[in-house]
Image (tube, rainbow, N blue to C red; front, top):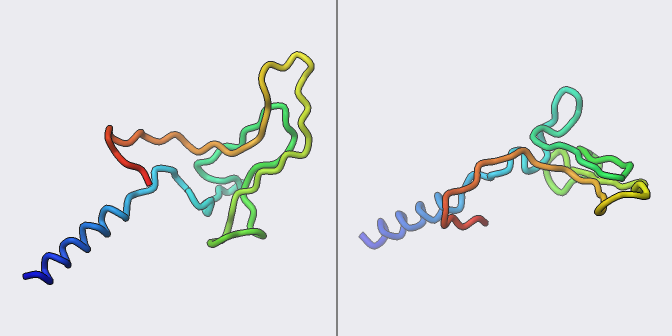
Length: 101
């Protein structure tokens, strides 16, 4: 009986830890026919550069994301700052009182 309780507790802990990732393509592994990252959009404001997948520098898997700013040139009347990055696709917010890890 004691072993059954421990086995049940272990299964429940594994189920809680195996939460689905809210961000699509979190490891930057999936690319489209055009080579762009699926579910990610490159963004930039006042910056010339590049943001997208690379395969020569990875932690694990086949790809990683690279963001490179070559030149920052805001117009003279620019309001705010600029930058370059990758924006994930929108996802539904989790229910209230949910703990995200």
